[in-house]
Image 1 (cartoon, one colour):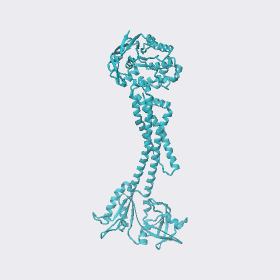
Image 2 (image 1 turned 30 degrees about the horizontal axis):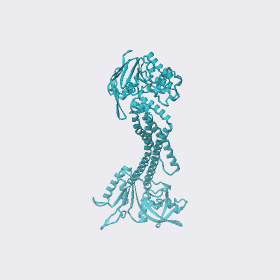
Image 3 (image 1 turned 45 degrees about the horizontal axis):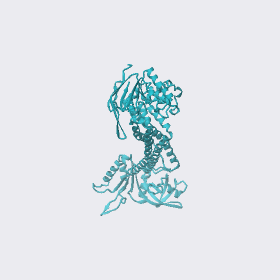
Image 4 (image 1 turned 90 degrees about the horizontal axis):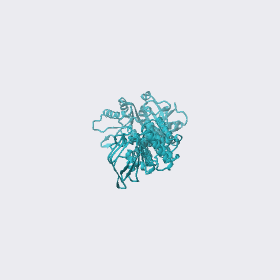
Amino acid sequence: MNWTDALQLALQALWRNRVRAMLTTLGVIIGVASVITMVSVGTGAQERIADQLASMGTNSLVVRPGSITRGGVRTGAGTTSTLNLDDAEAIADLPGVVAVSPSIRGSAQVRYRGTNWGTAVEGVTPSYIQVRSWPLATGEFFSTQHLKMAAHVCVLGQTVARELFGIADPIGETVVMKGMACRILGVLEEKGASAWGSDQDDRVFVPLTTAQRKLMGVTYIDHMEVETRGREASFRVMDEVKHLLRKRHRIAAGQPEDFRVFNRAELAQASEESARVFTWLLGSIASVSLLVGGIGIMNIMLVSVTERTREVGIRMALGARRRDILWQFLMEALVLSGAGGLLGIVLGIGSALALARFSQFPVSITPWSIAVAFLFSAMVGIFFGLHPARKASHLRPIEALRYE
Amino acid sequence: MADSPIIQIEGVHKYYAMDGVQVHALRGIDLTVRQGEFLAITGPSGSGKSTLMNIVGCLDIPDTGRYRLHGQDMTHMDTDALATLRNREIGFVFQNFNLLPRTSAVENVETPLIYAGIGKKERRLRASAILQRMDLAERLNHLPNQLSGGQQQRVAIARALVTQPSLLLADEPTGNMDSRTSHEIMDILVQLNQEEGLTVIVITHEADIANRASRRLTLRDGKLEADR
């Protein structure tokens, strides 16, 4: 018996019990649909997290001054002034480093005509907006020239611009902070709150040199963002940065470092890992229903084999071999699970799209989740169809013929 | 070839367990059937008729002894080889017809051809032709429950003949029929035997059915008693 004959026999048999076949298929439909929907929700969440991580700069390292021990007193992280602009420039020359953005933070009361606003002032270099992937809304960022000259220029975050200027255009206006007049070159796009809840737009940016010499009177920097070529490179660069800074700071082997290096990629990996676990969790909960659907198939196939014992006997008397009977019943299970798989894909895509439309869940339907769900349903068909089919094919013809 | 032996049974014993009690169903059967014979086997119920029929029909194998069909010993064949042998050499006609339910007459007749590996068009052609010979040309697409007993048995005979077997086994073929219909069925079997030289074995407990056979055997307590 070839497979088209087996398929035809299977379709005929299922058609004769179509209500039962449809109800059995429903189990698989729901199983496949829920796997696709849940994995789509999980993948959507995963992609949203990936987007957020990308906007944070996931391939970057953070270098901060560390703690030093003086006379037995350890001062705590970030309390020393060991990093400077030369360190930043040396790191920028390392292979695998795309850009370095050193910065120093302080606070100031920013005045404009009759109004004023207390905010953070950050001294940065022109590479800042690239490293943070933070585009400008209007105007321009300061240049290397401005940095060299410690120019009296600044760029505003959205919150500061709104508080001081309302809806007016701040470009070209002059604000005063700590007695220094600053010309406004541009306004950054809105960035929103950071992962830790602080308003990232409530900030004024000035050239690093301007902040050091004119606002704070210091020569160190207190933060350095190092953008690397990629996540793989970031781990290697991290080691090289440590090595370089130890050398530059003349730290003998065995002595504690006076700086700290953090790898953002580690954070990114942890978040992505948890999103992936989330997707797996949703997918595996949903696949339980697919499993239940498969058990439904086995149940109905076992009933069917018992009901049709006599038919099996007749077919054997007429010359059906074991594999012919096996094929016939296995094909029925496969048709049930295959049809359930296809209809489940349609229903799954439909409900994922509906969920995306009527709720705030980000949903991402991926071809692989569809393929996996369908393959899984086919496997369910084989797995749960095989036992009843084997049972049918191992009936003894004389007993099967006598079965009432 | 006309009288070469088609069936050679030597010293066949068969036991089976029924409700935990071992029954010695066949106690040493020796039987030779030649090509073109019309053999009737009679006997009271429990005499082993059905057991003998199952062995002759290659549905079951003897516990001891030897059975050769066309000179081929079937006692050591596996289930698939027996299935192929049944498909090629034996046509079955049962008392209760044993047609596949909710399956049309022509599809019932096609079924053995599926297992013989015959293509779809050829199957339909052969099945229709043989049903026509059984005067069922108008009933090709009828389901078994839309046919009378005699018609159903004619479908069953058509199904038994469609693979052109060398042996037709009929187990109480007229058991559930009125005398007119049963004569009609017997006429067909006799005609097949006389006109086409088909070897026919009929199991029956009705004397007038057995009388139409060219050779009669009686089975009693698992032994062949009268062979004349």
